[in-house]
Amino acid sequence: KVMELESKVASLEEELQNAGRGKRATGAKSDGLPRAPEKLTLTGHRNPITRVTFHPSFSVVVSASEDASIKFWDADSGELERTLKGHTNIINDVAFDPSGNFLASCSADLTVKLWDMQSYECVKTLNGHDHNVSAVLFLPSGDYLLSCSRDKTIKMWETSTGFCVKTFSGHSEWVRQIAVSEDGKTLASCSNDQSVMVWNIDSGTPIAHLREHSHVVETVAIAPPSAAVAIAKSDILKHSLGHSGLSNGVGDVDPAVAAQALYVLSGGRDKSIRLWDVSSQVCIHVFMGHDNWVRSLLFHPRGTHIISASDDKSIRVWDIHTGRCVKKLENAHAHFVTCLSMHSQVPLLASGGVDQTVKIWECR
Image (cartoon, rainbow, N blue to C red; front, side, top):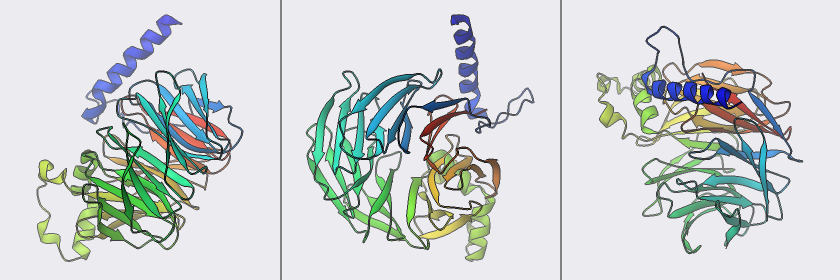
């Protein structure tokens, strides 16, 4: 068993070292995309899975569920490590701080809870939202936490004290999900009001209001610098600029400049995925293909692809350069696929579904 694990560690380390290099020199093509069939199916929750997230450094996946529990699983063996209980209603989201020392959770019981990962105890309960709390995340510094709610607001909390230090108001309906840029300066949010808002976190003011979705916007993501560079070099941007008469600006792309650009991805009940250039507030591309609500989106760590999950039970992979769907995991779950998470260091994707299971997919 130990020998097996050691060889697996060696192969994963090799894969990690090659992760940034694109095509392998040996001719073996590794695109780091999820492959069917799933590596593991994790069962134990008694209600739909609402969110999955990987620990920032360990091979551990955490799931939240409508059964009001949080479960920790070994992402290599699939073993259930522990269950946390404390919320009195559906848990909508869980998120680690960058160090992995704290986990935040939020619930329809109107609270946000902070859990210490040494003792696995709840160390703070944050009260302040007036309705269902839909999503939670830490700023990259770990000093602050953001939450959004059906009360139409986004709140910023100081992690050390549990005090609410800022409230972002602007959406006219339930705020479904939030995302933060890697530099911690920008926040994106999506809502039942069919719009996406982008905010300056320091000032608490909106810098963009993006409205082209024709139904509830379920999910939002901000492009990391790697993806911003890929978008700047992509055919979809050239095509978009050509249409808007700005094509004279497209020539050689300076990666340092391109990495600074702000792009936001959104998906929702109109079955579309939209990529937005925040500075111009223009939708650059619409990724169409899902046959039902789009529930979760993420940028591949390499920046070359987008991965999406939908109520059509599929997980799809989209090429940023061409805007096309290049891979489809059909019937990834037996019911709606609600959430996705990708490990930052190990080539693994986790998905959760209404079928009450968490699945782990190898990316190679």
